[in-house]
Amino acid sequence: MNRVGLAWAHIFITTCFVAQVCHADAAHDAGKKVYDYYCYQCHGYSGDANTLASTYLNPAPRNFTSTPVAALKREKMLHAVTHGRDKTAMVSFTSVLSEQEIENVVDYIRQAFMHNKSDYRYHTEANGWSNHQRYETAFPFANGSLALDTPWENLDESQQAGKKLFMQACISCHDRATVMDEGPAWELRPLSYPRKHYSHRVQLDTVSGASPYALHDNQPDNSKLSVIEKHGAELFAQNCAFCHGADATGKNWIGHFLEPHARDLTQAGVLLKTDDQLLAIIRHGLDGTSMPAWKQVLSDDEIRAIITYLKREVNNTDTQLK
Image (tube, helix red, strand yellow):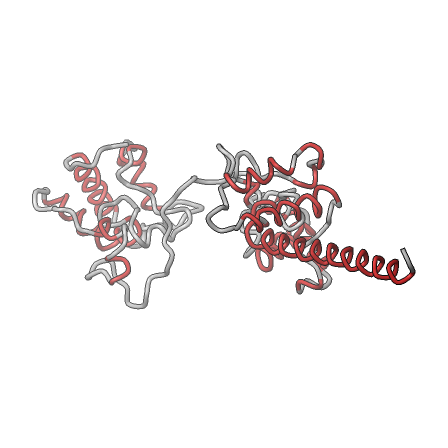
């Protein structure tokens, strides 16, 4: 081949190489774009699955940074993204991703996390987090090494400052911090505060009236009560129903704002207490709750009328002791 031919061959090979590199870079960028939109919530920006989802999904999302390339074949990954994985939170993405996009994101994961062990982080200056180390005292609560509900008295001065910082600056994103007590798995919770002039005695407003709380503020039929029971019902409606609901279950709108919630007075654990025990609770209140002392508001006779009403009302309606 003459010099001209060699020159053209060199140009052709160089052009092909550059085109391949550009194509690879474009595919890599396209895969990253797909990953950052659809995958990071579970698998993390760095592919290490150190995410909110990993704290409650079982099995947890895959940590790609600890998965050798040879241990997870490309074909298996393509199948997982295309068809999902049974008995996991990994769903099929065929409805939102094209075949080419699936290939791009799988190749990006293999290159960025499984081969190169990328250390891509969210809290960088480029992402608007300059000097992220200034939040260092809050890190233990964000990464779960310290439970958020650790009693204040069990935290040293630095940890207390870190908890306050976490609650002020971090919890909006790190909302599922590690806790010792997860609380109920599902609980009805109010989403808005009562408006000005809200009253549980007058007609309910449009929000509470259209909510599952409304039925608990409906007055029960007290027409068949004795004189003392009717007196107790009136006193309960005037003084107790605001927190405990008209039906005494504590499942009304206001009752669910209180922490702890207003007590369900239809429960056996309450109603099987003696009258004197209940009298003492109402008279002096309950520490650590919103239940105040009523001894300056209600006489003992009035408190006993309320107790008589509660026990008589529950035992003579369809409400069952639980």
